[in-house]
Length: 151
Image 1: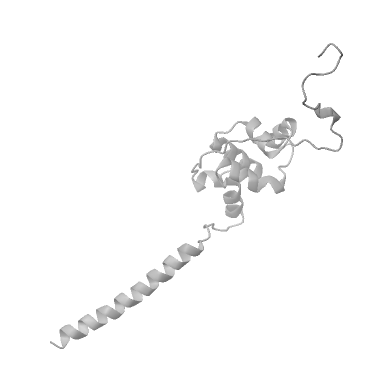
Image 2 (image 1 turned 45 degrees about the vertical axis):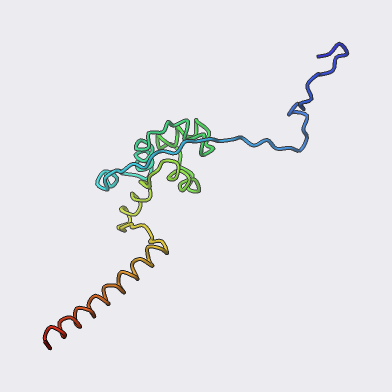
C-alpha cells in the first residue's frame, strides 16, 4: 500500500465484482483404455459393482474422478460404497474419463444384449467397395473359366 492507504496494484479484488460468476476450472487426466474380460464384468452383482470395477480398471484416484465429475467427495464415497446412487446423467462423462465402457457392457450383458461399436461412414464405404470388388472377382473368374474352356 502507498502512504495514502491506496492499493498500488491495479488488479480488482474478485469479491468486489458484482454479478460475475466465477467458474471452477476442472482439469482431469483421462485414463488409458483398459481391457477387462466380459466374464469379469458379468460377475458384478450390481451396477455399482460395475462402476467400481470400471474405476479400479482405470487407475484414476477417487479424488480425480469426483473432481472431474463435479461430485462432492463425501457423496462420491457413498456412491462407491453403494449407499448413494451414481447420477445417471454423468455415466457418459464417467466412461469417457475412465477410458472404458464397463458399466455399459455390464448392463447390456445383464439385459441379454451383445454390444458392438457402430461402423463409421468410412467403414461402411470400405465394406461396400469390398463387396463390389468380390462381385467383380467372381465375374472375372467366370470369364477366365469360359476362355480356358473355349481354347
